[in-house]
Amino acid sequence: MSNDADLVISIDKATVTRSGKDLIRDIDWQVEPDERWVLLGPNGAGKTTLLSLVAGRLHPTRGTAHVLGEQLGRVDVFELRTRIGLASVAVHDRIPGDETVLNVVVTAAWSVVGRFRESYDPMDTTRAKALLHQVGIADLAERLYGTLSEGERKRVQIARALMTDPELLLLDEPAAGLDLGGREDLVRRLAALAADPDAPAMVLVTHHVEEIPPGFTHALLLREGGVVAAGPLEATMTSDNLSKTFDVPLRLEHEDGRFTARAS
Ligand SMILES: Nc1ncnc2c1ncn2[C@@H]1O[C@H](COP(=O)(O)OP(=O)(O)OP(=O)(O)O)[C@@H](O)[C@H]1O
Image (tube, rainbow, N blue to C red; front, side, top):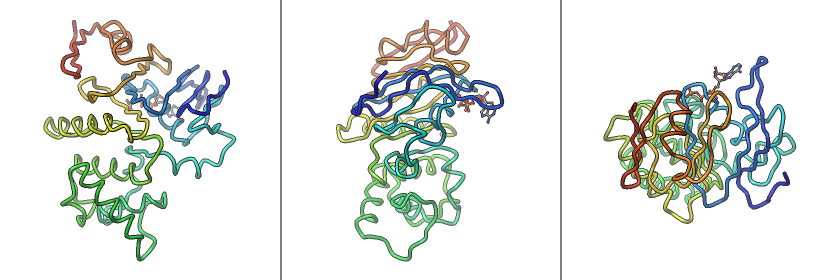
């Protein structure tokens, strides 16, 4: 398949193999700039592997992967990564606990973790503050990252991921570890982001259908490294597809833009 330069993600029969095992296998996936995708599947399905691939953190063992028009394996990934916002546990693990929240966000402008300059461009600081406001934690700007709750950290990571005005935003389980109120607040904010026509293309990884924000447009369901179903959300998110993905009979309900699922 030829790569369409307008596609944010264009993956053709991509396989990633480690220690003789295919972590993801023969994945075909195309994402357009205005699309918001949810990547859903059970533990070990390969979601993080697929996200790492599109984040430019690894490249396919077989097949091809283009991200933002660049072919992985043939491009300077450091350049490419500045165009991608990633919020994940791996990013969290690299953030020093004694960094202020504002610095955690502002340093994303240089695609580094940790402060290495004494003064920043005031425009960067203004932008970082606006992003903290957008994710609902403007009052935490001077707090140390290590003192934040799990939910607050997740929000800092999202603000940081947005700091470089990325063309692709990748969120790996942003609601994991949040209490019910925290999850609902995050879902509401992600729904607002999804509805913003200026927001980047998005891919959100989750295990839980309840965490899919209204306004997300597409879903890719993954099981044992392979795609069970992929496409527009309404057509893809069915009880049948979800049951196959999680290997349990499930009944999926969809009301007011939100999904719930239970064993049938
Ligand atoms: N370097 C590696 N070598 C061998 N196996 C690996 C390696 N990295 C990951 N795996 C395995 O590949 C599978 C897919 O892992 P991945 O983290 O992509 O799944 P996931 O869908 O994100 O899972 P979870 O929901 O539990 O985070 C898992 O079984 C994992 O143990």
